[in-house]
Amino acid sequence: MIKPYSKDAAVYDSAADSSEIGSTQSIATKLLCGNALLQAGLAQLLSDTCFNVLGSETLKHSPQPEPALCIVDATGSPEQALEFVREAKGQHPAARIVAIANGLDYGTVQSAVSAGVDSFCLSTSAREVLIKTLELAMLGERILPGSLVRTLLSQDVVRAGSAEIVPLAERRAADPKLQKLSPRETVILQSLMGGDPNKVIARKLDITEATIKVHVKAILRKIGVANRTQAAMWATGNLREIGSSAGVQQEMRRLS
Image (cartoon, rainbow, N blue to C red; front, side, top):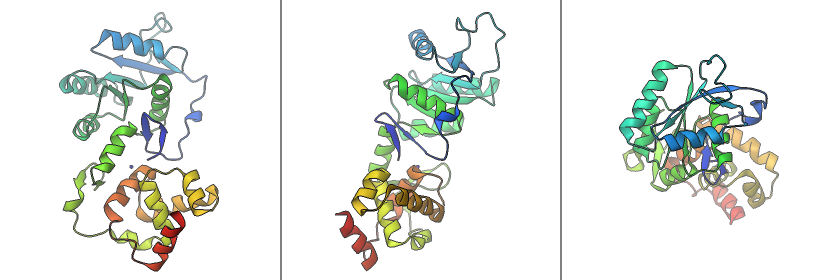
């Protein structure tokens, strides 16, 4: 699972577009916070957006709808954060859950996702990052801070299965799907692993950005992943032994 939409966040991208959430759409939002200042700050940040905070002045005199989104405070202890998540899932099982945290590591993320968290946002993020994270979460996307994704990739790890990350040393053989990739697709996948956007890859290969998009879609299909971020992590564990073929070497020279 990298396509950063800002320096603070990375999205497991798909066909979802945050513009699908219309400006007139109202999303009932519940805040579960152990920090009163954080709760007040979130309520202020979400004012004048489509996210209507339950209990706010806007909804004080109206019947309280069932929340479609729960924002949980993960800035305190892990135990408190997980309790908030369990409360949200127990009371509102259909709601999307976004956790606000001061910092994240893989273990924390794994525990939170297992408990029911859909997306994460750092408490230091800009307002526009918070809003975009919430919008994409409501569209079914899973969001992680870009800094955490880059750390995972730099630690030489690879996704194995739907919810487990294991060291590369534990892998015994390269994925046979690697053989399905053409030399150009292999080189493009290496660029994805490095975090290059389509525009940069197109310039390096001297082809159009539209062509790169076609190649990326083909790569995702061939290796059986849903988005660029998952492709980058798959590549981290499977592109170690490539580069010996003449075709790949030729494409590598084009990128140099």
